[in-house]
Image 1 (spheres, rainbow, N blue to C red):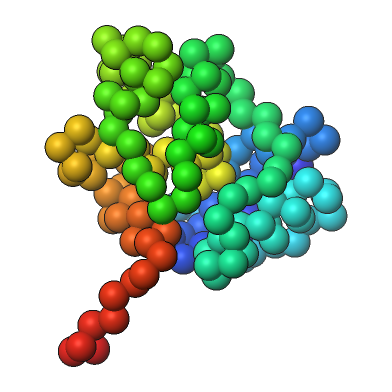
Image 2 (tube, rainbow, N blue to C red; image 1 turned 30 degrees about the vertical axis):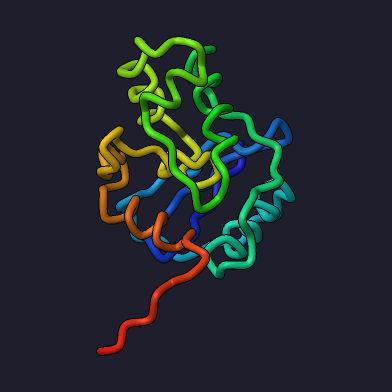
Length: 158
């Protein structure tokens, strides 16, 4: 398994993967300099993440290999179908997976997503439109959702 660190606008992250695909992108409290990786699968992921953060990329085109239960993998696959700049509720996600009563299980699987940003769990909100539950902190979820809005309003009083 190859591993590298990268700095993002939301903090330091660890990226892991191998020829089977990217398996983890996690925030870390570890202070580490961004590193370059000779592993092509990690280098491509780093480039695509940099493009995402600079506003040049809306979808990731990476081979993924997250580790989890079959149910978690179904939820993570469904998350990848949420378009850039859009949100769905946990209830909508449970309904789309065929079981509206599985809302808590869907929320739990969403919270176990090992590929922060690449599998866009930040696009899932509460049924009332509130930002709820985000392993990286609600401020990061808000930042990501604001980042994905096509028309960012300029403040008159900057």
